[in-house]
Amino acid sequence: MKKIILFSILFLSAFAVKIHAQDKGSYKYIQDWSYWQAESPNYEMSLEKNAASDNQNTFKIKSIKSKFYGFGTLMKTIKSDGYLGKTVKMTGYLKTDDVKSWAGLWMRVDYYDVAVLAFDNMQNRGVKKTTDWTKYEIVLFVPDEATSISYGALLDGTGQVWFKDVVLQVVADTIAETGSNKGRDYKIISFEKRAKAIGDEINNITDKEKADLKKAVDSIDQQVDNGTLTNAIAKELKLKKATEHAGNIDKKVAIEEVKLNQLVKDQVEGKYEDEVENKKRGTMLIIGGSNEAIGENKTEINLTSFKVYNGQEDKIKRHYKRTTSQVVFATGLNNLITDQRVQNSDFRYLGSHFYEWGLTLNSRIFKEANFLHAKYGLSLMYNNLRATDNRSFVVDGNQTKLDVNPVSYEDSRFRTVSLVVPLHLEFDFSKSKEIDGKQYFKTHDSFRLGIGGYFGTNIKSKQITTYDDDNYKSRQKVKGDFNVNKFVYGLSTYIGYKETSLYLKYDLNPLFKDNVVKQNNVSLGVRFDFN
Image (cartoon, rainbow, N blue to C red):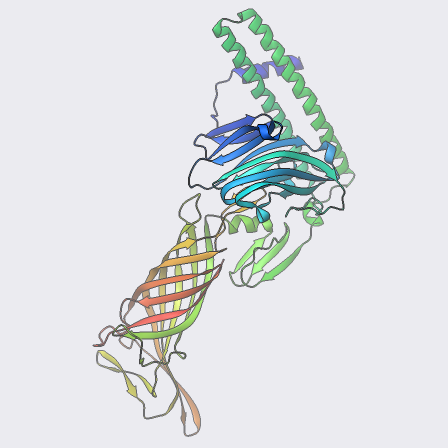
């Protein structure tokens, strides 16, 4: 009865209408190497025969678009049974032509599809530009928990890469691993993850056998339509195929069920403790930018960006999403431009300064391109002017002017505080990152250029003077509007590397609204965007 039910399920699956079309592409095969090919492909994969090298097969990956984001790879996946607990070296020969980004060999050790136990794709030593045949290698340790090993060659971006003579071999454990994710690093996979992975594998086995049966049934039906098979023979062949695939399911699922039973037994005997309890915990306090991995169960508190990351997965998810946030701090010199110049200024060049505090959002404009970003937010700007020659501002009707004081000032400072909305188009030259085989876009990791402006309102004007009065030090603060423009708007630009930039701002409207002589604020300094 059990077999009859299984056959019925397989037949129903085989004849079901195709509900799910392939997701804009499909898997292709060149000999025993596979790759995923999109409907609108970025790469051409091919096999070349080279008579000059004893008819050795050479595989090629070639970009067929002039500009795009992504990578192409030819790969194999094998069972890890023969390599468990051993160090494996992958060797192969690569040749490149006009590779703009990088190319390389790669190898990954997996526990089903829930954990990457070891990984190296040569990104930190990738092959670039045009090179002749050269031998390269990757060394990884295969933990006892591993279920599969995937390996191949890849090309990131545009260009061509050829590869051949790819070999896996067991080497001495004394040979160091090359990957950033090393197999010898202590890793714990929780009971829950293991149980789910085995359950998913059982489902995958069933789904694959159903799909293979459907292909076989479609082929038989095609032969019936062509008249090369009779309906009676076709029925027998279908039954035979159903029996074959049902047997495959029984055998493969039985192997996974043995693993599941052993897993449950080990859990009962206390061999698997909670994953969180076995990994290093702790809290890291960071000042400035940090790209360091923090571990799955550590907490990173970034004091400059006011962000808290609960584990590496949370950090990656938030750090590489399309819209990120930054705390902005800027400081530098401030002055007024009179008649389009600052020569012979009425204010001290080094004593006049500005500060800016703000929060910005940085959104990648194109989903699969990192170059253009929209940067916007809210900032509080402090502009300070220190007058020369013992002068301070006085208001005379609708005019605000500098007058010499009868008292000798130690300090005379005029401050405006503005709340503004900065808007910039940012050009970010940061390259994408690959983490566990996935591509992520990274911002603020290279040279950046921002062009834009700001608009807002002046919320406070204040003059502060310090002087000696009969041997008593006096400090006077006078608040008022001083005929300062209520609204402020201007242009700004910055250029720099990572979080540090040279910053220039210029108010398009004058500081005082009714003065006969128009004076516009200008600021030059350093800006920090803490990501």
